[in-house]
Length: 116
Image 1 (cartoon, helix red, strand yellow):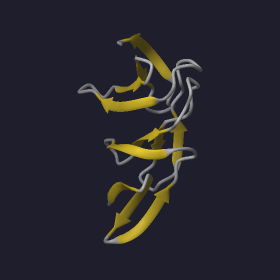
Image 2 (image 1 turned 180 degrees about the vertical axis):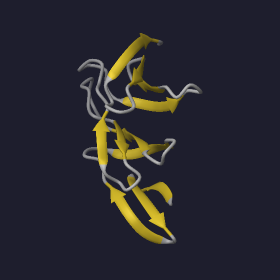
Image 3 (image 1 turned 30 degrees about the vertical axis):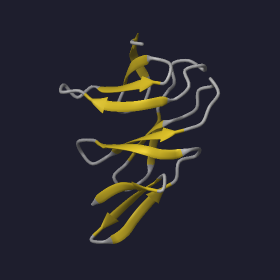
């Protein structure tokens, strides 16, 4: 299966045929990260004015929404990046300078540090 972003929408194709599409609830998808096991993390660019908006999502390999990542604070803006560490930890960075560790099963914050 090939998963990619086309015009801000996440699309998956299998053998050249569209398997599924996921449209973010607000904004447009800008980054993908395929996790071990096939699930996908999607970073969504959302225009916001110092108010937090859902901007990091986990989808199953068949396009179903698992979670929207918890935001640290209502004034953090949005998530701008996500990565998986060598030990399997899931990390994300907010526009306002926080780096958080997320529970990959729930999207809840388990640790945080200010890095800006």
